[in-house]
Length: 171
Image (cartoon, rainbow, N blue to C red; front, side):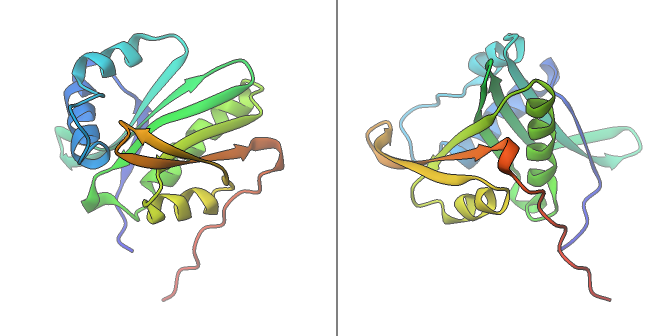
């Protein structure tokens, strides 16, 4: 596992296009059309109940790049993780975990009891990732993705969750 220095921050207007392209290339691949296009990402960025986060890495002294993002809708008692993606070159470096931990901490602060997320039923890496974080399978949704693919809905009950442990580092 390589170490990628990154910082988590709230997204801004300059991030919209890159988030939309990441969604298209990393999440929506194989589906008809482009559902999380720049206009929809911009709407999410402006919505009061939605939080759009980015993880950025430093390219050089004057330039940072988006390495990952998350879009979450917060309600009164639950949150819904709409999208989460990390560029392949930055995967397994802790960025996805950092994004989820930020969302969980925000949800707990807001008094929210659980977070839901859906993913393609055949996305075993995502399922394993979420299970490690305390999410549990709650439902299979046939044809969820444009009637092309089924989805798995998972839920994390925040008050019953244990914090994931950092992997042991060997020297």
